[in-house]
Every structure is written in C-alpha cells, then in structure tokens.
Image 1 (cartoon, rainbow, N blue to C red):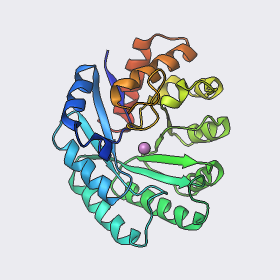
Image 2: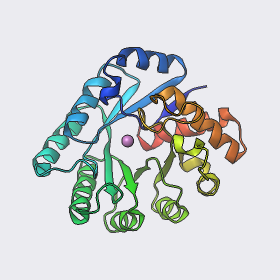
Image 3: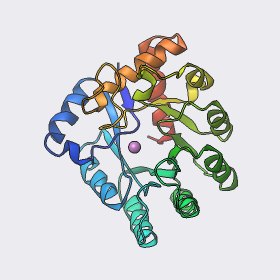
Image 4: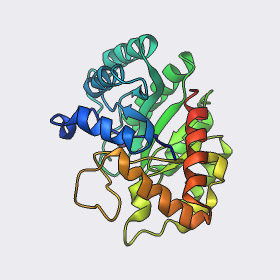
Length: 253
Ligand code: NI
C-alpha cells in the first residue's frame, strides 16, 4: 500500500533535530508522497529547501490568514517568484481564520484574493485553511474563480461548507481530527464522494488517536485512512489507492 499525505509541515522547527530520519522512515512505511506546506514567507522558503532534497516531496508557498504582517504585498511578490522557479504544486495554505483573528477580516479577505490571483496566474491549485469563516470563504471562492480549484485542508465537519466546496469543484481533505474521541465526523465524511476525498496529517499538529499527545508525522496518516475506510465501509487499501490517485490529480503530478 502507498499513501499520499497531502498536508504536512516538515518546515516546522519541531522537526529540526531529526528531519532526515523522519522523512526516511515515513517513506519506508509506505507514505511515498508527501507535501511540505508553507504558511508565511519564511516557512515557504524552508519548504522549498526541504523538498528540493527529495524527489517524492512537493512544496506549497503562501501566507496563511494567521501570518499576515504589514509587509504582505512585498512578501507576496517574493512568494510568487519562488512559486515560479521551484517545485511548487499549489499556493497555500491560504484562506480565512476568524477563530484566531477576528479583528482583520477585510485584510484577510484581501490577502486571500490576491493569492487566488497568483494561483491563477501560475496555473496552480490552492490549499485552503478555513476556520469559523465558512460563509465568507465560500463567498470569495464564488466571486473569484480558482481555475485549478484546490483542497479544503483539515476540513471542518460542516456539511454546508463541504457541499458548497464540492459544487465549486474542490477536494476535501480530512486529518487526525476524524479519529478524536469526541469528534463526530460520520456525516461530513459521508458527504464527500470518494473521487473528491483526500487524507492528511497536518504534522506536527493534530496527531490522531491512539498517538495523541505526541508529535505528529506522515506515518500516522494511516490512522486517518483507517477511520475513513471504516466510515465509508471500504477497505484500507481502497482508501489508500483512491486518495493517492486524487492527490496526484489535484496536484497535477
Ligand atoms: Ni497546515
């Protein structure tokens, strides 16, 4: 079996001490493709540095709604140049987060839209981060067509958001949160047809059961796949194969 972890952050400092080791063991465990997702200028540069060393890793670059500073216009120019010249498969993670930042909604929308323009210009999909901002996120996607669509990463269990996202042609990615003890992911997962389904870890965060409390890594994407297979009533092999193929398709690999 081979797995594709569509969202991880090996550019996080929590991996500084054993990055090579963890990437090697992840690959050997059957996670034969994974991403390194940028969330600000620095982490985007670091993502490229890492993925350039491994032909089975791919990078994304972007400014997340929680990483907007006063230099964002200049930073976006740099991000665009990086995306143009490197092994970048998407613009992200980008979007809206009203859970952590309620005070700058208009700015968040502006930065999100600018990055949709960059994705369209470079013919790339986007990776969306949305938290407590479903309505505005869908509104922006309706008004600003994303040519290559993209992925709702760590998708909230919100059926309306999922329905609207699917209508717009987006893929839905679930993370370790489907395994959490008090989570009720069944309705949300059922809403997503198999050909739009993706799995991710969001490493080093969102560690799935039974490993909660430890650092997450891409090997644990298998726990996410197991839970989804159970909900969808298909085999783990099916989920591995389908989500791998979907990831290759949306990331155009
Ligand atoms: Ni992330």
